[in-house]
Image (cartoon, rainbow, N blue to C red; front, side, top):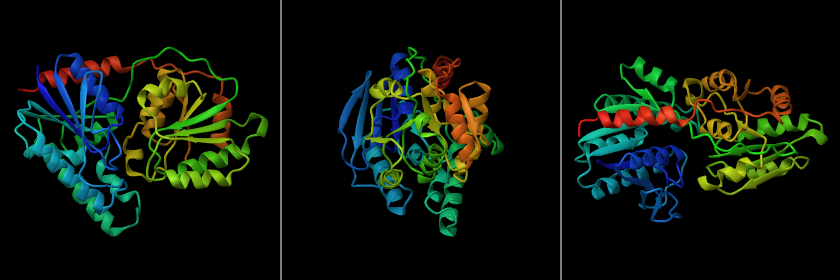
Length: 360
């Protein structure tokens, strides 16, 4: 049995990937504690999910959004975690912003779990900013340097692993697939959902404009559930589309996912392609989650997520900005089901093999 500290810079309320991997480790006989960052200081200080203990650190209000105050808050969080860790065997760093902890602990092995191209996020708020570009480049170089000194690297996408290979860093992809669930009855009335972090208003603008093309009698309801930096902007945007039936719900827990999937017939997962990680290989977890419940998704066609979606018959890819194509895809997909043939089982086996190979 290994003592494992899993560290993530969000509140893990929940973070499905973080909790899923911790649950696999506990099932294999390890002791796992997740150290999460309660940025808005509104979560339980401590909780437990399926035998996984979650400790949430508070170091002052820290907004999401890639600002310099966010970076300072993450530094304080890392210091708080480092001061709380004792006698651990494995430090499981979720994403690049947790890698600096590798030199601050006495862990026998370091596992780097690259969820995303973390250095691209700082540019999202203002992609044309020269200062943000410089910061992004420095973050990328620091991540690559640190990644070369850890004991093992996993990624959330085979395309991220290809990207690391170009920088001579070996890694193994562990995709965000979940266990297949009992198929849900498809609602008689069409409904399209978005469940997750709400970040880019342009995604919802595209969806709403596309729905306006569809005849009112065939037009689906929209259900948006989650939170994020653009939540208020989406609320204001939705008010402008008085002809659409748009329901915006608060954040959700993973235990609510089944009932939420029962409310929709299609999952929407399209993102602006100028966000660096989209073209480089980001794969939305919601696409796999939807398919596990039999729901098809609509994703970006001209991106790796579109390749997986269409090659595995998980839904339809649509070109970014193509409102007519999106409207046609929505009409085409209502009433259809998806099947997640490749679920989490293979990913779980790969992950545990990697952990078992660590020299502790």
